[in-house]
Length: 170
Image (cartoon, rainbow, N blue to C red; front, side, top):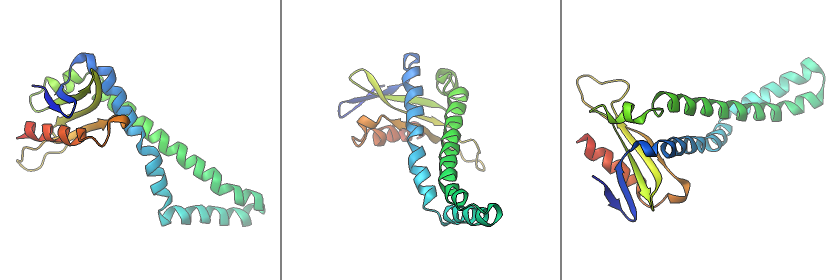
């Protein structure tokens, strides 16, 4: 049953929402790359690694230029590596779980998938599914794939979707 929230309607997923749900998930995950890269750069281990490589290159190569260029090259390589990791993660989930949402989330009794619509456009998604690892005898559900379009954030949509998953779990 659709639930209206401040100009938005939360309802069950339909097959016609497949492309919108997939692109929302992909865009939401890709937003994590810059934040996580900058966070990685604040770690002391990253600083020590860059300094260590630069200091080891100078005596071994005898080139100050090579030693100074090591850090920017390693930083660029780190960015490409992290970006590639996120691309692979997104592609894996699009292929495994979001390729056929109807089959993976809607046909199983313990799973479900919802979308939030605004003016006929899908602006957010969320799913509920059993966790990959069960705890001893407890029935639990996992809130998964929550993503809200950037232009519709800070309007309570994620909170409402989380409440929908909680109601489903109860």
